[in-house]
Image 1 (cartoon, rainbow, N blue to C red):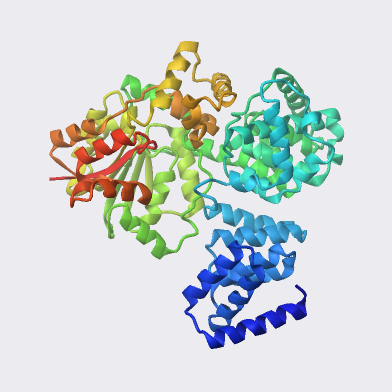
Image 2: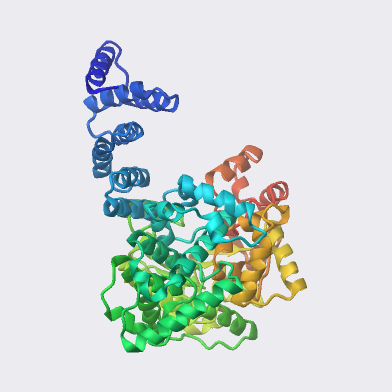
Length: 610
């Protein structure tokens, strides 16, 4: 449709609108329906009708942008998306859409800015960024070849044609995703593993003259090296790869003391197999001038780990750590802090949105209230609580100083000042002489030698009208984990990076085995620390709902309810519509028996003192 035809169509639309007025909600539904049915012209007419009456109608602006984008009018699309973003800067879809048009227009910096914003806002949160990575046809074609060869050795040139790496390097979204979050999915992992080997061969072919490499290819390799650091080098590594990567590392170590120029591609290749901060003299790399993609890589792999190492010495110890199991758990999380989170999704939300979510997490905590985060790990949960309850005082404790150092760095990044971090063993917390209005113990009690003992200690710190929020593993939901732990024990795998990689490959190459589908679908499976926490934990207890009922009855506690998604709650209430069913553990036990994966992530629930 040319410009004259579009104007005529709009004029016809105005005539129709004048003769049969409709409310904006109906028109919006009509526009969406028309677009979904392939009637883009009618959808555009309806959107313009809406905007004539409500110029600040974000949905219509975004849909007009999508229509323009689909017809190749990307400059117009950018204008519409920008108008929508000006009305709501927190709409991930609008940021993703404008970024796609910017990329086609060759404005890669603008595209990256909006792709990163979309990811940070939780774009694709339900299915993950992986769904959007798979929209690149070159990536999909290479994955198909990779999967065909998943159980045999094959040269990278068979998987990646002459133009494939260039096409992949030009994918701005893929690079942003690699830099910002751990990529999940067995097929994508196989693809990225082979891509890393292909780029390694490129760097190793002429390492000291690799500076001639295309800038986009260097940017891709830097992004892939960031991904490898984020997932703690969980990808499989062949002997040939490690020989080539080790030779490049040795060459890099020779260049460092002499202060010679180091080609960015060689640096990225080494960083994709070894954490740069572990190399002697790596700190000197921070003083040189680098392209932005290399500077980002060095910040992640050298500056931030050194900052955490310096921070460890500043963390106070509130209690002794003497229990044998506690010491083993501490050693695990010293080696692999968990989770190694990257994005603070709440940072972009408004204060009102945070207060609303905070109320859903247990009510409004006013100024002067005290919260204990027991087993805070790397600080993700603590930073969320600090943003939900900005006027509360938060004490966050963990047994691992490495985890606490990670938490402190991320808390400084978020600009939060209401969290106090300290090292402590939950079993010894009664000695600190403090009480709390709210205690968060999500995902920690089941790693104690005696969960009941830890439960009792925490309850002794809870004020009479306080709430304790607990997370425990479900026996019914973790059958795949139990099967995997049995296989690990049978084959003698240890909790080392090498054995974790080896065991994971057993699962990855058998992803169609029914036993492992839950593991393949778990985000924890795609990083070394996550996989160790999930499958190689030194101590794990699992519970039933009857076990929870016994704990509550023994301590005279009120059960305040499970936290579940709205769809599951609706399904439960259809089966158990009676008043009070949501806090009836017998009803939940029957529901779980019929739906054993209901609490796959954990039982998460709140209790109060009677």
